[in-house]
Every structure is written in C-alpha cells, then in structure tokens.
Length: 375
Image (cartoon, rainbow, N blue to C red):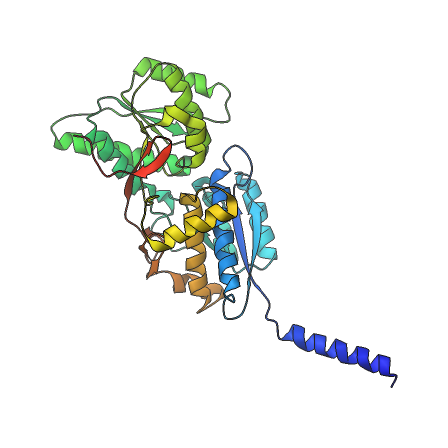
C-alpha cells in the first residue's frame, strides 16, 4: 500500500476513535422574552442560565458530557413561544428552562405535556399552575404568597382607599394576585372590625389611550395607595406619570417589575416602592456573593432576581441529569431540598417551591432588604 495512503487511513481511523470517545453534549433549551418592551427579565434569566452552564462545563459537565444551550426568544408572544418550543423539541433538548412569565407558561405547558419535554420556569408565579401533576416545574412560589405579603403591608400602612393597577396583558399573573390581595386585605380589616374597599383600574399596554384612562380613574377615585401588577418598564412609566400629576401615595410592586430597569427608568418616582418577594439582594450567603461578582465581571451589571433564578434552574436540572434522563427527570426533581444561591428551598410533589419571603424597598436608587413594618 502506498505509504501516503496508509498514513491517511491511519489518521482517519485515529480520528474516528477520538471522536467516538467524545460523548455527545446534553442539549438544554431556554425560552424567554429577549426583545421588546419588557425584555429585562428574560435577558437576566438567560444570563444566569448561561453562567451556570459555563461553570458546569468548565468543571467537566455532567458525567463527562458538556451542556449545550439552545436559546430562543419568545418575544412575549404566545404563538411565537409555541413555535420556538417546537424548534427546541426538534433539536432534541432534554428540558427547557423557561418561560419567564405566566402568560407564556399558559401557552407552553400543554405542549410540554404533549411532548414530554420538561419545562422549568425560573420566575412564573401564577396560582393557575399550582397543585397540578403536569410537566412543569417552577422555582418561584405562587404569587398568592406575594399577594398576602402586599396585603399585610397595606394593612400595616392603615390605608383607606387602596387601588390595584390591573395589567390586562398578563392576566394569568395579575388576576390571581389581585384576587388574593383583595380577599386578604378585607380579611385583615374585618378582623379589626372595619371594612375596606379595593378598586382595580385596568391597564392595557397595547392601548395607546390606556394611560390617560388610568390617570382619569385615579383622579376620580383619589386612592391613598397604588399596587402595580405591571412589568418593570410599564411600572416605571406609570409611576412617573402619576407623580407628575402631583400624587404622593405610596407604591407597592411585584416581583415581575422588580428590576434595575424599574429603578433606572422610574427614578425618584419609584423611591420607597415596597415588594414582598422570595429574594434578598443583601443576602450574605457566600454562593450569592460569588455569583454577584461573577455576574458583574461577565455582564458589567448587578445580578438580580431573574438571573439568580436562572442559575438555580440549571442547578435543579443538572442535579437530576446526574441521576436520570428523559421522562424520569421530573420525578428526580420533586420532593427534594436544594441549596440555591441564597439558601435552601424545597420543591413539592407538584413542582412548586417553598421559599421564605423578604420585604424589599427601593431606597436611594437601590433595592434593599428592610423588614421594618409601619406602625
């Protein structure tokens, strides 16, 4: 045999052997809103997921197999979300981390059940998804818990005419929060021998006239407290417009709006806004401090709730992947305690987490932990 041909055959054989010894990557999908008016939550979630996967791969992956991330933008549109989910199914991902909002989860959970691809949402919190034996796991407690905290905050402030700005674009999130907040606040006042009205003013970000309609409703009702169920940018804009009208009532926000985007765009208007969420930016946990440093080096900004939850979602998934695969992933995840970035949390049999809540306040342009209650 010609020596050159023999040499080429040897190289091809060795190359085949080498490639055969390299295990294929484990494909993981991510779906979140990465473009449009309210993309900050999706971007921060993706960033947290990316950092977690990079860190795991640098340590050798899962049993020698690297993780390969496939990112898709749902554009905060249910139909787009369904389309990109099907793309990820065709890519043969083992699971999808996401989505980041309840309205998109509503569209994707039926597909997850149909295809057997597990959804792990870092931030979805609607009560509609609780207590269901489906192919959906989330790392944020139902927003009913958040609503209970917001109702207690309102009661502590002894408000007389609270008002909720009800976001019509994400009713899977806002309707349960509004219902629970209203019921709990009335219960608290009734226990004190009083009655309390709770007014909800609708807001539709797709309606150019909605802001003016909202301002008119506030002028007529004259509330002494406003609870925003809107996203970060909408909350910032609305808070500014309301303050410009001369109103000084206290503001309450939700985990959906709690971000640097809110603070940067809301400015002085959102100073003092209160949140009750399962997150503490001032946590002294070593893992959280290390993550904040890594995030700052990687992206030039502070880590937040979305990025923290994205990291935790990868943690939960990879702990299961180290043991099982495919249809057994959910069983390997539920009924288990995890050590997240800020402390331990438990995922119950239905895929819902149990996490302590924290009172946060925007002070001097920063989100800080503040457990002091009003007299």
